[in-house]
Length: 109
Image (cartoon, rainbow, N blue to C red; front, side, top):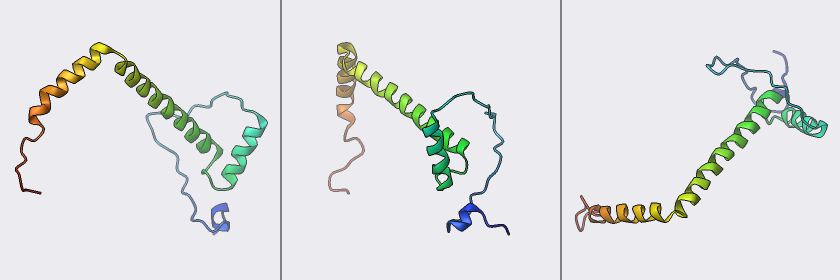
């Protein structure tokens, strides 16, 4: 068996399989600075990902996830600043106060 980069580094090899997905691959035409491309190549050579494409895709997915998370937190902040929303939340919470201990009996752990 041929010596792979993973085996020579003492790691188990990563299986590389083509993904069959409803989301097909598309060659993107983005450009990055030379230093970024070099850093990606070095990271992949060090075992950070199975390929440069996988490394970049994972980085983009992380950035997109963070953008979605930030939009959710921005919506939370906007709701917290809305007096009508906050009053509705207080009244809804108060309506459920009577049900807080439903089903619990004293002395049972």
